[in-house]
Length: 86
Picture 1 (cartoon, one colour):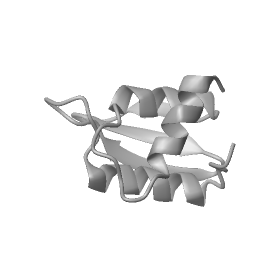
Picture 2: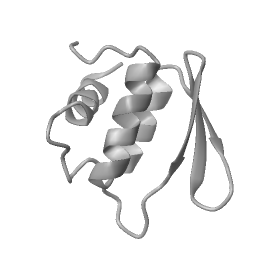
Picture 3: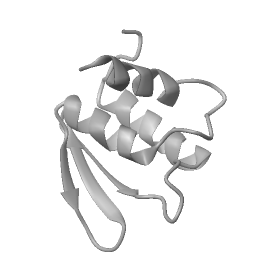
């Protein structure tokens, strides 16, 4: 995991949720953590990490992730036992 991935991970776990986290950065982080990301219907993606599964919607037309989706990503990472205090 590079420094950009670490910075994205820290942003995901900040409280309150940030409005400026780029979705592509989140996808790159998930892949760096070892997740399998599969295309689904429409703007959905399936993410498989450490025995956990989640379906997320890519934001569009904006590139930033909304706060609700960011909280969902945070919960998924917590359930997948990803440590954010790197």
